[in-house]
Image (cartoon, rainbow, N blue to C red; front, side, top):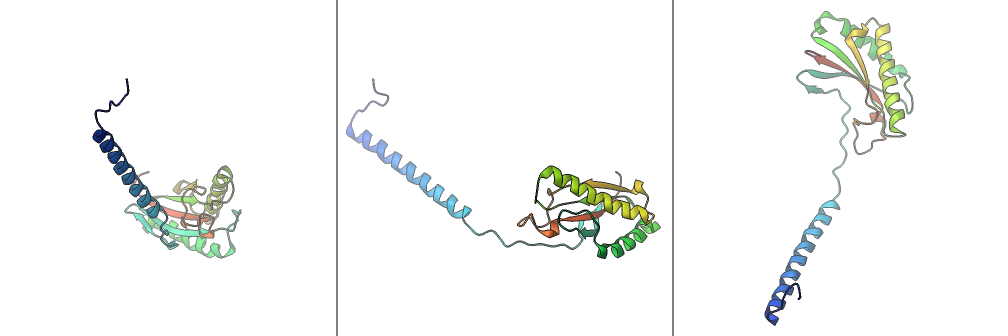
Length: 171
């Protein structure tokens, strides 16, 4: 016994016609999806200025690093001196802690980059401690390539950085 009994020629014609309509509908949907996927992405926007990330978090300083290095660049020491003076100022005591967030670009292996980002954060923390900032007010963290600034070019030099973030409120 056939799965679809045929009573007459008109029912066969109707089934073929509805199948064609259904397939042409799928074709239109697939074409629209391809056209959307082929559109040009918007141009990258790279903003490297410090930003307020919320009512209780502010990026205070960003230091960029050379490729595959955790050595603090020479031009960053004046910034670190000024930051240490600010962190020791009693008017900044409302910040309960300062995160020292290390980042890398996406070149190389994830495990290596996670370690390198932590070493960058540690180098900045050590420099601030040498300038009198207490270690208990700082928390070093390594994010590797997981939080790029330039998401369109994850190997960009702007992604190789340490950000010092003031965290207000409890931790």
